[in-house]
Image (tube, rainbow, N blue to C red; front, side):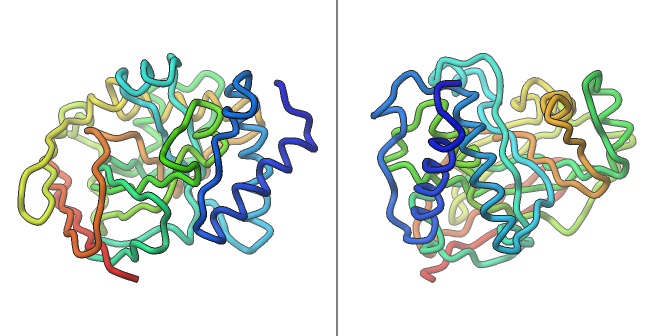
Amino acid sequence: MTLTEAQAREHADLLLQARDSGVPIAPFTDADPSLGMADGYAIQTHLVQSLLDRGDSIVGYKLGLTSRPMQELLGVDSPDFGPVFASGVYRDGAELPVDRFIAPRIEAEIAVVLEQELSGPDCTPLAALRASAGLVAALEIVDSRIEGWRIKLADTVADLASSGAIALSSTVVPIAGVDPRLVGMVFTRNGEVIATGAGAAALGDPMAAVSWLANTLAPMGVSLPAGSVIMTGALHAMCPVSPGDVFRADFDRLGPITVRMANG
């Protein structure tokens, strides 16, 4: 790690100020190109603690960089992750205020809800499957507190893996009889199809995404509690949003999820 703990805390404070003000900051890697994943997580740890100190709570995690093109773009060979906070969870049909975010984009994903606690370091996709209550149709608003989305790995990791908010269907589909890899999805904006995808886009298997997360958290002494929501990764390229846009993802077996982007 390049940063000292004091420097990591200072970087986290800058991200916190950007979240509060709505004014993005320059990439940390502009000033120090040597920053890497470990530095990003050190910053993220301080930012998470600041948000917890404000009274928010963690209800799950999101994975990013689960597709090969995104990994190649940032020069990595593994995903990243960030917490999902209770304050950023919406339900099907919700209106999401665009001005809550800085530079929002949207993605359709499969979310996994855990029925049992899950932990590494030897978690397998089969163990993740057995610990799961079911699958949920989901949308994620990704956002960047880094100006212009000019992110490198350390920047996005520090920024909670570019997390913004999530919307979840009210239906948890039991895992029995469903192969998450084969769950297809059609994504529309204002009724026009703009993307399609399938569960296999998320690390080849959404359950592989969940087991990767459990194993990655294990050295930090963190397990995934029962009831956790795991956003397993985008099934298509992220899409820009504008006020008034209505986005809908129709999933095989899981059903639809819809959100509307409001002015504020």
